Length: 592
Image 1 (cartoon, helix red, strand yellow):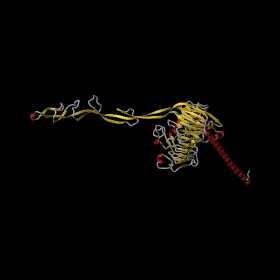
Image 2 (cartoon, one colour):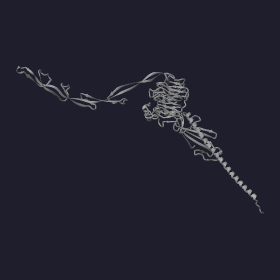
Image 3 (spheres, rainbow, N blue to C red):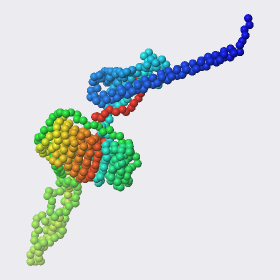
Image 4 (tube, helix red, strand yellow):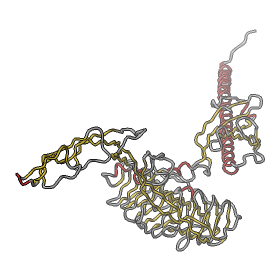
């Protein structure tokens, strides 16, 4: 049988083959595209899980820091429990969410001021994503059986200083309109920067920084003031300086005005601590009488001694020397004892007779009368008058004087002299409207009058505080006081209305809530302490009688200096960090 090929059928077969080939190509392309889409979807899902794990870690870190800030005095509050290990750590039980969970650990490896917070998060990867495993970043952990993503972050925290490092810190403007305004610093804990912990202009330093968070023109108006420190304002803020004003260190200001290069910037970002009452009940600050030191009496007297004083006095010791003569030898003579030989002539015979030889000086003399016994030596010649047998006179050797060696004994006596100074404290019985004997006190309403603080105390005033006029605040030696007030005003008075005898700003801290809007220091008032009132406008007027008008620091809304005021920042305040919030010093993602 012979088959006959038809040309038309051959062409149809070629077309079918070409169609099948095209379909195969299109099918393979579609499969590849679908696979690519599947892979992209899987990678997107995994990326979302990766990012979700970090979100959970951050939530854990936030919760750990909030627990530290809210319960730092007692971290073992349910559900936080102690692990009981050598690190003194506590942890939070797992908190679960849709598709994941996190756990937080707090390690007190150093102390409560430098804790470590570790947060770990686990996210369940979907079955669709797990069907196409891909590589994750190095710090991810993937469990092949459960298909989870784990991430961990370790942060080191520190307890910040709530008071910053500035003599003046404000949310708003700072205007130094007064004359001869000076801002500088000292350190009450450094003997090279203070005198017995007190301010001394001879030992001052250039850390009297001035800070304003305002980002407006003339946020800080220096005027003709001398700021021995840096000035910092907000991102858009500016600093204006008068013709005779200067900002910089003391050495630079010896020959310059204006702003020293590098001593002004626009990086201010100050955190003003919120003020809330630490308690709402306590002792009532009642009044009464109390004996207090009101002054001193000084006296001095001259003192002499044959021995050097021990211990040496504060005054200069003078050394005095004198020669002492003795008529005869003495047993156990003092150092430097010596014999003195002095040639002496006398008309009379000394009594007692000096040893060893006395020379009698004589001369021939004729007198009409017979010489008295003891006035001559040898014989007497009687002179006759010729043959008349009348005595003409007497000739003899008359004693003129006696020569001999006078022997004395002498030594050099050393004495010491100095002045003894003494100071006596004068005590007076004073009547006070309020006496704080130590502990927590609560007062509702406007607080004024005279207050005496006998021991470390805390006072909450649900109202204004006014110690101006006849009012006063007096601290005993060693006493401290923290005052919280809801305002709206704080009056700090004039003259010696505030008496802080130890001279330490940290001994007197006044906190104002957001309701406190005004603080005044007027006249020749002095203040040694700290003012923390972020909503208050602080006005200082007067001053000029001394160089210690304001010692410490002020954190307020705005400051206006309308007089001759000196502001001295105590650098020791920068080391007061016991009551600040916990902030992050380092952030590291680690292998979970």
